[in-house]
Length: 266
Picture 1 (cartoon, helix red, strand yellow):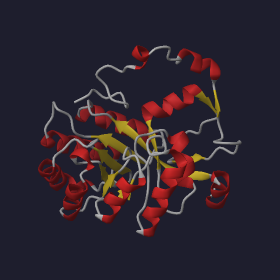
Picture 2: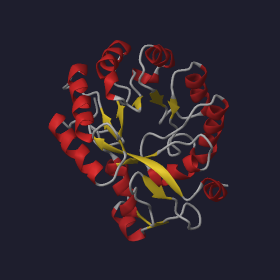
Picture 3: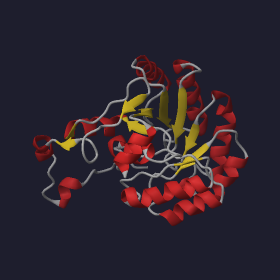
Picture 4: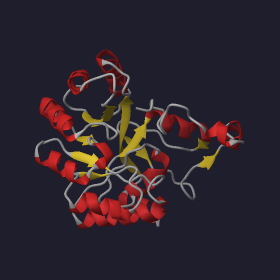
């Protein structure tokens, strides 16, 4: 089914790249933003929401990123469910002129009611859903008109089968879909295989991890990637590299003080 869908919709696909980590200040965001644009990326995402900063600090960071990359490159922001509704509304009011493609997971717990409220008070599109787990949670976000973009990730949302059900539910509501949470080599097949699929996220760390442990993974070139034409997912494990990543005890799997993305826990 996935191979058939890729043939129907073409062999290349749009991408976006997460470049701006929460610990980057304005100067670092500007530096890396310009670097990624120079490398050909046409859509960039940065993280906001950090205990050491206020929403006002994040407003300055977003403006610094926009000024650095110019008006013609798409810019997304992601709060990883950090803000309460009040702070999220204040931040949105300060950065609406930055022409953002979306504000991802702005509200604590992805509260469907609060997301719908925020969506009614800002022109910035709202996105959410990378780790919601099952179709009924997505139904809550969709039916409550909480988001402009729904974002299942096949690694966190029941694989291709459950995520495809989310895609069809979203299509019934004329809702576009992308992915959050990285792992482009797995999510590319879902998004390229449905009519409402949007860009695939190349989170830099996960993108490079995929390149290390698998052979034949695609890279984004000028904002697009080529869907692999090989059997299965189109790439193969590098077993020599995987040997170094073998986990022999639960203690070895602990990522002390950090979440699954490697960010410091709040």
